[in-house]
Image 1 (cartoon, rainbow, N blue to C red):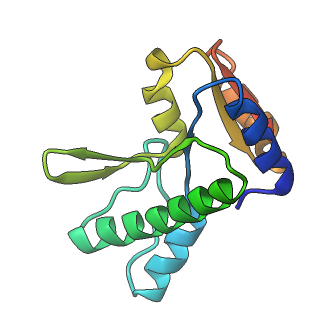
Image 2 (image 1 turned 90 degrees about the vertical axis):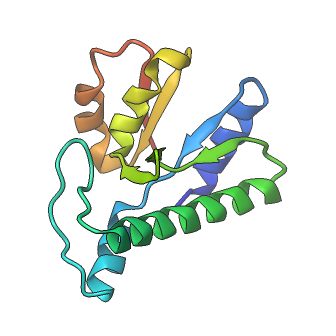
Length: 140
């Protein structure tokens, strides 16, 4: 989840800009699927392909719990940001999107985007987003 250093960075950023945070949860979704007896498959660059409504709803439940945790932690610090999950609802269909793809989907609407990752993933993410001038990759 969010470290104290990441929370301080978000707080400082939110004092200058409108901030939207997209929370993920791939590892927690994998655990929830395994616990529910659902198949845990490797997913591709677009995200997790779900085969049933049960899978889509369970994945969304995990993401919404993570969203609530982040909102609560930020609210406790009096930080006002928008917290979203990488799920598109198209018609009545829940479409789970990989967080990196969700960031790219948002690219044209924002002046600056940050991909926040773990230190061991930093170089891979920087290479992945190198061609996108508005995306900055940082790690906590």
